[in-house]
Length: 222
Image 1 (cartoon, rainbow, N blue to C red):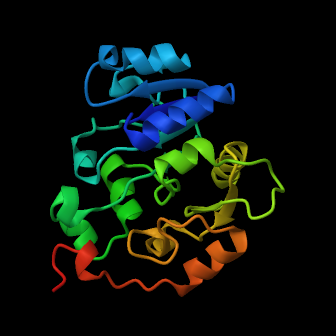
Image 2 (cartoon, helix red, strand yellow; image 1 turned 120 degrees about the horizontal axis):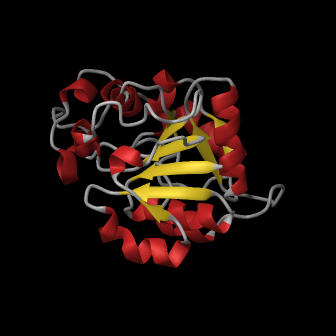
Image 3 (cartoon, helix red, strand yellow; image 1 turned 30 degrees about the horizontal axis):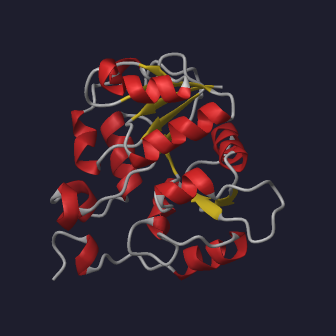
């Protein structure tokens, strides 16, 4: 596949490395110039591009940037992807540690619904709760006992099927976490976030989640 990645931090950079190892064509970008990614491009064989060009003719697009930076993305940032190509977002909202208050999220949107609203395209939420080093090193073949599972929230259909296929290729069991409106079940502070559960325990953790934001994960909660 041709995959466009917007963001080359810990998760975006790790996905660049892993996806190139799997033989995918990767176009990677950050908030600066392509030249700033020369080392990553040389290491992996990915093509460094401007962020505005990362999604061009892509079969799948990944957005992996700080939540507060999403509104800075160019209008129509993913519009040049191929028809029906899914968009993954790996972001998390950290109001105290990094992002400050984001009103739409605090007012009730899930983090991913807010991202989808900002970029004008539906998204799938995945890769937001796994440590980058485990994403890099702990993938295992399909059928491996106790294989780490990753929840995937988003619409049913061909896009979900492609995202699930990619998660499996990377060495993890994809778990259907429901529609994007249910993606709060895998946000920071929930039972599944930051855990390396297998598929059965991932489903249990998703079911046990509660939607209310605690003070650690809200700019407004007392």
